[in-house]
Image (tube, rainbow, N blue to C red):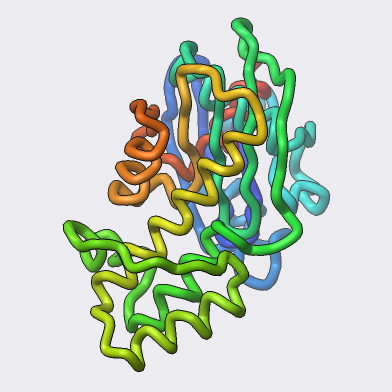
Length: 251
């Protein structure tokens, strides 16, 4: 028997096929202009070749969950991220999740239930969108930002507002400041923003970092350095919400 979890995010739509013990299949597609269409594509890819009576339940999550007509149940991303990370690491008590358009900090109790969370969804500060826009100014992209930034001294990027940060980076480039140092500075500013969010709630060990930005090893290292402690990063940080949705669907 299987369950399916689909997480429709602003940048990517993620899906997981789950057998109660492990991830059997995963799919990640750019969300594009139609969350409804992309979510259906992800669902179809996951359910392909599986008899309908073998799928216990399909659970939708993410900001596009409202248009998932195929979903048996729709659950908030807060709950799904919590279930997903707790399935992978039951020692987790604090989750830092940085997605394409928002970021959040979630506190878990010993049973893996949410007892507190804060969310920044008012602007793109410190999110994947912020990193995408600022790294593009360097002629790079998110996938290559680690290579550009690694081992370089970060220059100070004082503004976390995307518009002002763009102006600041353009000015630094005009002053012949190295792209490598600016790239490191962009990641350092995101690290500072992330730790600032964590400090607004109770930081309880063990800390897990999820979302697309957790793929950046340089960013992870910077956050660990500021916090003075190690953080848990799953093998695939983007699918945690979809995994949590699938775990909920299996029960």
